[in-house]
Image 1 (cartoon, protein in one colour):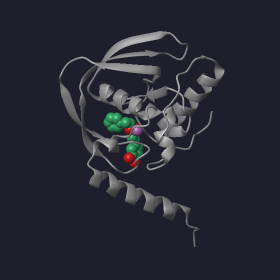
Image 2: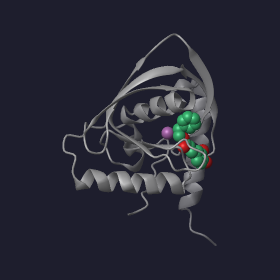
Image 3: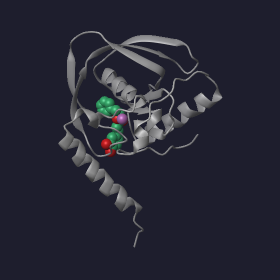
Length: 172
Ligand code: QAP
Ligand code: CO
């Protein structure tokens, strides 16, 4: 098990389109274990492999209060079930310290595979639906800041770039 480094906006690697998982072997299990360790430590409720510079279609989620309901989705897809949308305050481990209201479909059907390659097919609503959509966006190189105005996005970019520069400065 290992903690992985989380890429932060505006790192261009976050724009990479992830590839489908084809072989469900021990290397995929290792990636999943490391992603859960990294997500729980952060702490976060969702993480996409893209965020830890692994460009395969894998996401980990746990929206439970007690952090004891891990959900891994491999090669995930979703379809929108109706016209209902929901405004939710979203954050992202790759955009630390920033939270904004985003509108997304509220009811979705999810098709994916589990860590053994078995097919999953379920509906999701509310926070789980939002979280799955947010994480699938990462696999397509998309971030929640892309839904904001240019002005809001560029303010966030400037602030994070400044924070990154200060992190890289030697300490006195
Ligand atoms: C995506 O995000 C999400 O800024 C998962 O300083 C979030 O786990 C989907 C986090 C909200 C739906 C609603 C963010 C941790 C965690 C930060 C996360 C931070 C520390 C974000
Ligand atoms: Co995110």
